[in-house]
Image 1 (cartoon, rainbow, N blue to C red):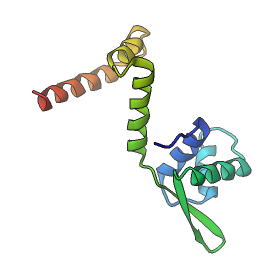
Image 2: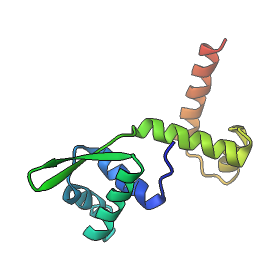
Image 3: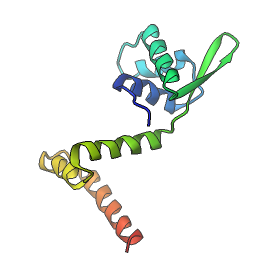
Image 4: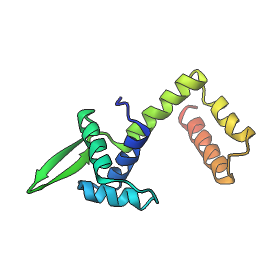
Length: 125
């Protein structure tokens, strides 16, 4: 999978919202998150993402329209697996226990986890 930095991920996330998108569209989405993103910074990040083959572009008249080459769901699934493998020896329980012990799990989180476990049990019975 492609190695994407935190700031590159923010640009990707803005692009995943709706594409194809111009650099101006992406900058506008990023700035809605109460950050002051500069055009040159975003264009540099877009160039890096093109070089990494995470995104590509089409030239339309005098502008470039960017689109992702990586689906958000598959990127997130791969990153999640990587974190669990690297930090928790491939085990999910210690990760969830860490959140539970620090009271970072909401009731909604608990309900969703229960539903996932129930579905897993049905699928793997």
